[in-house]
Length: 216
Image (cartoon, rainbow, N blue to C red; front, side, top):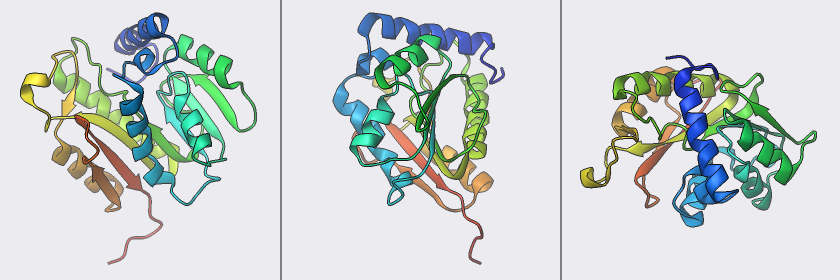
């Protein structure tokens, strides 16, 4: 499995989200979230990454129809925003809703062609369909590396948690061990890593800050 948009697995994911958008429009259900409340909660976790830096540039990998841009602007962030998504219909809807200009651009793709101060990914690791878990995990780790390269100052992402109730898990979704993902990020990206799992959803968010130097 690779991270190319031409990957059959990513094409399957794009088809899934395209159908959600066609059915539900530019709503939380249109990007396969349960409701606006949980959608906003996920957005809010990433504010810790860009806190006190309102002019920071940001890449949103798997941006859907661009709702995180709306959220950031309402929160007072002014920096340049680049949204990437593998579903062309999502990018078309983002352009329709928010336009395009110097401070906001939209791209069809799975790997950013640029760098920004920060990079985030929300929800892109969840829907694995019938892909075996070990293969999907490889895709997750490769994509985390993509985020790490894209965000000069740091990056963040969320994943469904193995800490959730077993009877609530679905076989078509991917659940990760929070401790394992935390350990991976600490080993690969330094010690400035935070694990957030206290916001009431069956998932966790990882925030990584890049440091120029680490104190001994």
